[in-house]
Image (cartoon, rainbow, N blue to C red; front, side, top):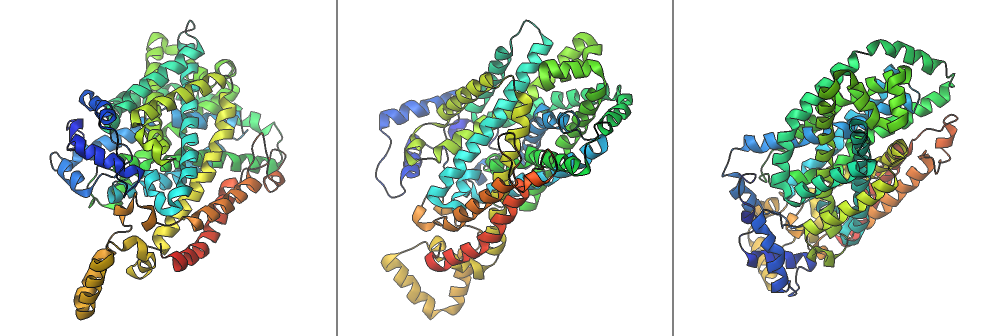
Length: 563
C-alpha cells in the first residue's frame, strides 16, 4: 500500500519526473527542467521528502500501490487524519464564542452551532469523492469548472483561507503555551507550532497520514478529559443563561446574532472542502464514492460535534464563572482552556499540551494543501517544488500571526465567515455541474471537445468505421462518456471549459455575499436590517445568486464552445 512504500515509488524514474513536471507547464511543449536543477530538486526524495507536485496520480499507479497492502489500513489512516485535524482545538475554538461574543443562551448556541456545523460537513464530504475518481488535488479538479485562468483566482482564495486558519491555530497555540508556562512568550508559542507543522508537511502525504493517525489517540483522550473537567462546573450554566437574558437584547438583534454564529459554525467544517480530495488521490479509481463520502462526513462530523459541545459548554460557563472569565479576558481562548485544567495541577498542564498538539495537526494539513494551490497560479510556479512553497507559506503565516497575536477573537469571528462565502459558491457550482451537466451520456455529449481523444486522419478513419457499425458506435460512446470528467485533460486547457459561466456566476455570488455580509469593517444593506448588530446572511445569498445564474450561463457556454 502507498502509505507504507518508499517515497521513491511515487515516480518510477528521474526521467518520468522530468516528463511529468514538464507537462505541468505546457502539454505539447518540448520545454523541460534543466537536468541539473531536476537532479538537485529530486535528490531530496532520498530523504523521504515528497517531490510530486500537482501532477495527476494515474489509475494504474494507484492500483499498483494499493495492491501491496490492505485497504483497511488506508481507511484507518484517513479516519485518523480527520480526527486529529477536526477533533481538537481548531474546531473547538469557534464554539467558545456563541455566549461570550454573540450573547446566546446555551440552548440557542447548541442549536445554531451544531446544525450549521453538520451542514458544513456535507461540503468536504462531497468534494472528497473527486479524489479517487480523478487522482487530482481539489483545486486541480476546479480547472474543469473555472478554466485555466479562473482557477487562479480560486486558488488564491483557497490560499488565503488556509493561511487564515493557520494564523488562528498559531495564535491560539501561543496563548496556550503562555498560560502553561508564564516564562514563554506568545511569539515563541506561535513559532513552535509553525515549525513543527512545516517539518511534517514537507515530508508529504505518507508521513502526514501516519503522523495524524498516531496523534489522534492522545488527542481523543485529551478531549474526553477536557469534557470531564468542564462538566464539573456545569452548575454555572443556569446563571450564564440568566445573564444573557438580562442583556435585554431585542428579538430581532438576538436573531441576527444567532444567524451570524450559524455562518461561523458552518465555516468551521465547510472550508475543508477546498482541499478534501487531496487526501484521497492515492485511493484506487474504483473506490466507492459512497464510502468516501461517508468516511469523510463521519470523520469530520463526529469529532467536531464532540469538541463543539465541549467548547460551547465551556464558553457558557466562562460567562458566569469569574476565574474562567478572567482567564479568557487575559489570554483569550487559549488561556481559558488551560485555566479549566488548573485544579489538576501538573497533570492538567500535560493534558493542555496534548490539546496543543491538535493545533499542529490542523496546521500540517493547511501547509500541505496550500503548497499545491500556489502551483496553480502560474505555469512557471510548477517549477518551484512543493516543499519550498510549504516553507513560503509557513513564513507568511508566522508573520501574520505575530502581527495579529493580540486579536484572536476578532480574527476568528470576522475572517472565518468570509471563507464560508466562497466555499458555498464553489460547492453549488460543483453540484450543478455534476448533477445537471454530467449526470447522463446525453448531457455529457454537450462536452464534445473535452471527451474527444483523437484528431486528424485517425479521427476520420474512426468516424468511417462508426458509420459501418452502429452497435460498435453505441459501445464506444458509452465507454467514452463513462467517466464524470475526462481526467486525462487535467493539464490540457484546450480540452477543458473556458470557465466563463463559472466565473460570471461566481461574481454574482460575490455580489450576494457583499449585500448580506456582516463584519466589523463592512455591513451589507440586507444584513443591516437584522437588528442592532446586523445578521450575517452573506453565505445564503452567495449560494443562491450563484446557483440561479450558473445553469443558464453554463448551458449557453456548452452550446457555443462545446466544452
